[in-house]
Length: 269
Ligand SMILES: Nc1ncnc2c1ncn2[C@@H]1O[C@H](COP(=O)(O)OP(=O)(O)OP(=O)(O)O)[C@@H](O)[C@H]1O
Ligand SMILES: [Mg+2]
Image 1 (spheres, rainbow, N blue to C red):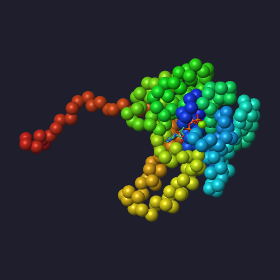
Image 2 (cartoon, rainbow, N blue to C red):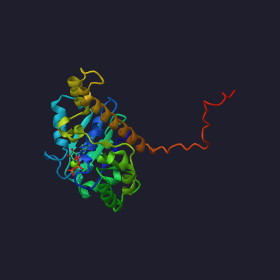
Image 3 (cartoon, protein in one colour):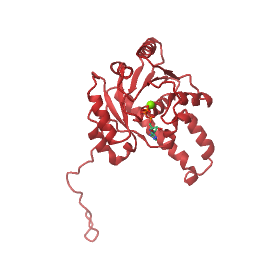
Image 4 (cartoon, rainbow, N blue to C red):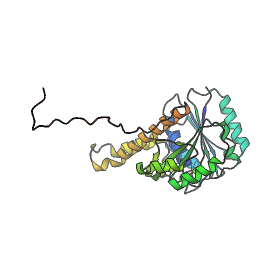
């Protein structure tokens, strides 16, 4: 089966592209049947910068913690040729049935980022707030993306429930995914945390001995909540790749008021 290509494209510094790519890759590489290839197509590919999320550091941590990486491969490319060679090579390869290629792009809509747009099965544009959503949306509206579906992805503070209507209104270039990547210190530090699975094992080792309701167990509870959010997001992206879209449920309007039994009156028979 041909691998599906998910590209993170949001031409703005610090939009949340790399963190979203790492979180999704870590979630998708759970089973033996799923293989994930992450392509770092940012101009600073291979650099280990201290402030931004960094795929090189993330990959090093995964290796250091001994997690199985047979099904997770990271490539760093710095030219359109390198990028297209890898994509073409992977498309021709006999990959396991649910292979996914995740492509991280840079903060500019440069040739490297644009070269992959038409080859993608879906474009995901992360943003941390409504202002950035509006800016990214305006840039993406000026790019020819053909028929490739484009979705906005709320990250960090943009995930707050109250922000949703404003974010949806700001991101005019496409639909905004219902699930997002909420703000979490674990995601902020994901380049140094490695695989979500090894983070879970480490937190379990440290906090699972506390009873369920003990406040000391909070880091483990918070992690499980975040992990489940990322799982929901991965499922939603999977549905979007299959052409389905999740919508918010409208509150059900009752047609007639329910008659209330008046306890002071006679009991109806
Ligand atoms: N859900 C989150 N919770 C907490 N921090 C986050 C989250 N998502 C991203 N961040 C933090 O926001 C910053 C920017 O994120 P990231 O590096 O992923 O964005 P980017 O679009 O790849 O940026 P760059 O333009 O530097 O490539 C990083 O410091 C990262 O740790
Ligand atoms: Mg980045």
